[in-house]
Image (cartoon, rainbow, N blue to C red):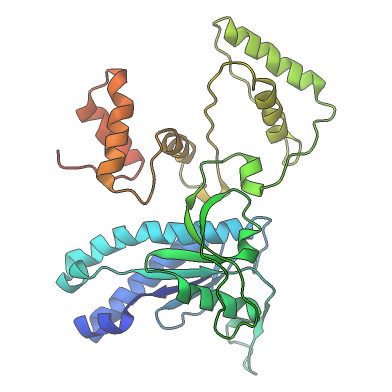
Length: 321
């Protein structure tokens, strides 16, 4: 992932050198914290640009998803950073920081360059060049990915095709996509983008769950806990229940924990409510607040108390009214 600060030359003309150093340091620290949250590895800084690897030094099965999630999280963090910087500088208040991000998936060789064994490890390879070129294609405040990365994302994100441009120094044109937002499809099928395996040898478990469902239809609420090691088929069993209920009138509400949000206890609730109400990151705060008000109005709750509470949980600025 390449993340580059937009308009750094113009920024250097608006504030003094020491102020510029403080701004760049705050920007780098903000981005690095996000990248580390998704278990990415930040290389030595390249001026005001940031290069990060996902898959080194520790590999994950979902490195592409982690990289794109980190890119969106950086874009989400910038408004908060700009508010802090703007409070200390009129110039930054009038010209907030913006970034462009490019991501590509491919092979790279990581090692120490030169004869000094104490030097930081660096990566070499075609993948880095492509990511840098993709970053140049991105509009300020957006992230762009290659077709190779898109292939690994499944349905985890909403993407917008940008055609197959020829990148400088890259021989063959390649499909390019802008990342719009995370997808509302949060099940394992959505995260991995592959069909689930056949259900085998789980007749007793599915019968037990369907028996609980029958009690629900008779007006007796039920709770079922499935527990087991990773790969035992918990998600597959839940999907089997969903398939069995497809023809039966019901309402399915789903939330999920995430290894990227281990320090956010309310993440499953935030995710569930966000998708339930159709809230979108790119919409203005007033638009999302209006959606919250519309959803809460039929409940009879006092909006002046409930709306600020829910908006705060969802990290939506609460309007003065």
